[in-house]
Image (cartoon, rainbow, N blue to C red):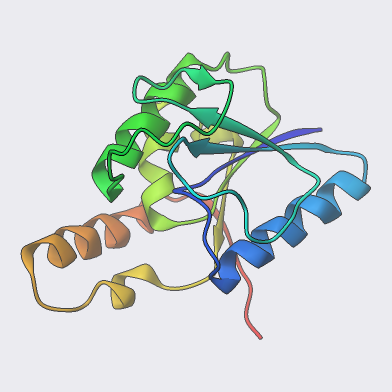
Length: 157
């Protein structure tokens, strides 16, 4: 099975450790797993045996993780992911794992909902529940992700 995991970027946060471990386990079970990540992100802090496809501003695959100096934000990342996902032939992957509220919209816009799984690690609308217009917009987008009726998996400890 070929599995794609679009991410906003890589970081030291524990959620990225979970994604790396998930990708490793899926790979050990015989699946081909690939992360789709905008260039400019850090390299994965938590090592993974999954491959990483870096994408540029226009959603094209990049040969490396070029740090262009431009700061990525949630909106530019969604635009890059949407462009990249639209370029991928629909039969290239058997499953797409959206793993953050802000990765669900690019998956939807690319027409990949039938192949999508929404892996929820945190309830993002609460995370963005703080003052400021940017946070209100992000909270709204996060709330909308739960209305997409994606097959949702929640992991709790």
